[in-house]
Image (cartoon, rainbow, N blue to C red):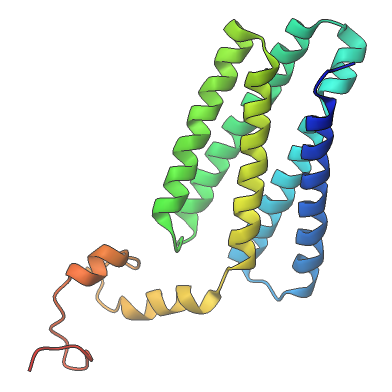
Length: 192
């Protein structure tokens, strides 16, 4: 069938393992609304990775044309990435995120991969374009898995308690924390 079918099976197996571990960890953790949303996103990304790794096989069996297979597969992957971009952006603006720079960089790279998938649909029609998008989906799954495992509600609560003034943002970032002058009487590093 394909000369690179081992690649698709490896991506499928990795996505299935991530989905299994995330399901096991998700069952055992007490969750708030933000954590449930993160788990839902993680399960969606891992299961989508498995489905998109399997997608070329029935397409190739039905159409028997590599150009059409990679165009259709890239089109569906591109549409899925566009859907996830809008959903993640909406969820990021709804919930306070602890790492906004990381989230925005993942969204920018996802937009770049979406553009590559669109170019693959209309111009390249290659396995490489689809494989790059599939690998990016696997990377997004792995990053979401790590973010879900490392999610600590107390860090988010500390950011909320530190921001007592309504004019002070809830999350300032590390550089803004270091550059901000501390005039509070109870600050441990105040000038003598």
